Every structure is written in structure tokens, then in C-alpha cells.
Length: 220
Image (cartoon, rainbow, N blue to C red; front, side, top):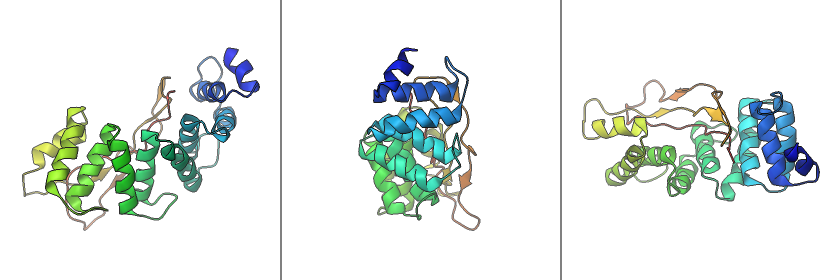
């Protein structure tokens, strides 16, 4: 009731919180369309968390027709405000060519911004970009540094990659896959399509296992 009253009075944090409640079914019936209505109101007031959440809804078709270009738009708005998950997901979009053309240099740039904010998935992906020379000059020292940083945070792919890092045969393989979707600080909802959805195409060299994920809905 508090969130609704404040949301109806135009408070963006309350609008975002009410949208999150509708998304997760917390205190109200789950209704993705209503979640989008309230998230959009908050996002229009430059609430970065709501912008990110709206991007997740568009990427997954929650309450809207799936539209990767729209997802990129909202991820970018959140990313430009410094949201590390928005930066990470934007990097994923550039790697996978969803809503934008494939651009490894842009992907690496956004992974770096998120990695510098201690986003473990972004640290791992940036490490693989350095290992493979995707969007950056190949640099095994930098690759190890970023992958080790992700491994220290418990990233399972990074832990496995470190074991393979110095083993020339077989070369480790790049793996790109989305995270589950959840509401930040609300209940988890495993919903992104295809954990493990993207791997290197047939005929490409085997590389370090990398995780490129579509990150979670903001819990704020």
C-alpha cells in the first residue's frame, strides 16, 4: 500500500519497487505487464535500476513483446549511469549481436567498466577477451589477471579456466551464457533463456571457457 501511494504520487523509487513487486508476485499477484508499467514510469524519471529492469523485461519478453533493440536501449541508459549489470548486459548484447551489431571492442569496453566495479562475470569475460584478442590486443598476462579476479569471487568458469590456462592441448574454450533473471533484493526467478545458450561456433578454435551472461533484474 505504501509503495502504491508513493508511486501514484510520482516517486520513482516507489514506482520501481512496485514494479518489482508485480514482477516477483511479492504482496500482489504476479503481473509482468503491470511490472513494466511501473518500471517504465520510474525509468522515465532516470531511475537507473528501473531502466536496467526494463531492459531485462524486453530481453526476455516479460510483459512486453521481446525486443532486443529496446533491451539495448534501456541497458545502455542504466550502463551510462554506472550500473555494473547494465554495463555487463550491454557487453553481452555486443558479443551476441542482440539488438546491435556484433562489436567485440564495444563489448570489451563495457565488460571493463563493469569489471572495474568488481562484477565477477565481467571480469571473467574481459579476461577471455584478452586471452582471445576479442576487441583488445591479446595479452595472456591481462587475461590471467582478470580471470583470477573473477575466480577469487567464486566464479566457477573462472576457477575452471585457471586450471586450463597453461595447458596448451586442448586449448580452453570460450562459453557465453546468460545468468538467471531475478529481482535484486527480491526473490530469484530463473528465467533467462538458455543458461549456456551461446558457445563458440563450429569450426572455431577451442578457447578458455567464458561466461557471458544476461544479468539479473535489479534488486534495488
